[in-house]
Image (cartoon, rainbow, N blue to C red; front, top):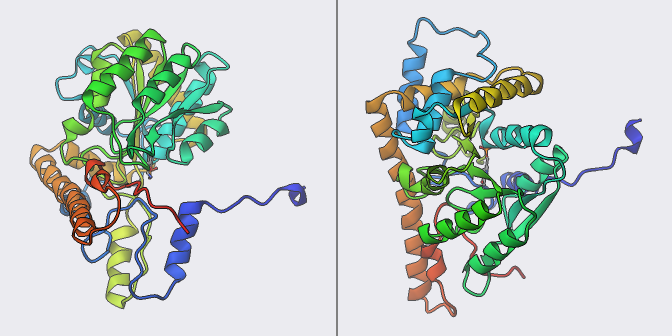
Length: 381
Ligand code: PMP
């Protein structure tokens, strides 16, 4: 029967990476993939991840047994705390459920699958226009229809807040709204606090369900609380939410090797640094009370069992060590400032160069945008 299977187009970003690798031009730069690079254009293993690695390797009690279905309990608890804040009322009231996932993609998938089973049938998931391409695919794969809400205003190279609010108002009550918690991919444009408040006002009135995608906490501004402000604001206002977290960017745990490797030394280094990386993330639900959280948690477990049985251990063990040790946590925050600081610095340098060269047009959006993505406003030829 295979002969009737249609040929799927290659993934644009990963295809670009493969083409980039095959290109022999020495000054090539890959601007397509969302992965942090050093000044030398190389991947960066966070110093705190190296330390956690050592701790892990010196742990005599470590084994290769299965993890629990929902992952390492201290990892999911620490992930919720990281996202919602150490003094989160929702955590204190024990109305939070969580499951370890295969990075951010796995978290969004598990959440979408959950919604496909338990959210009122026929609800549409709204994603920003534009958005990370996988959003539509993930929701469609579990049978949820996807529509979009305006987000990018090409005239201002900023947020189309009126279009956004208008679409939220026009959407059927109880729609699923996918929101980028910070460092919007691909525009780099985030709502201000005031705009988030307006978004929450409409969503509350329309009883929409917020599904936050948080792939860049600490990586956007270098400040973990600032980068999760939107999520915390919704929770403070009493929303029930889903939030999917990725540790790919903020821990450098992408789990894949994407660069061209010119020397033997670098091959050695890359193999040893990268082969051990494993993708980890977390899906957290904030519910109205403890009993509900328990029910949601039990369904997370049931769904996860048939999906992946139990999550991979390695990356989550590293993150678990760092998140639960105050000294290592502080070192991680410093590593985050190194990465976010360099990105902000690169934006600044690009902006200044464009001005210095008297480049026609307005370029302030380069520095106004945040995170690793930028909509330049340039058109391809
Ligand atoms: N959401 C967004 C908006 C992203 O940009 C990414 C990473 N490109 C992800 C989720 C998840 O990525 P991963 O599965 O690698 O954690």
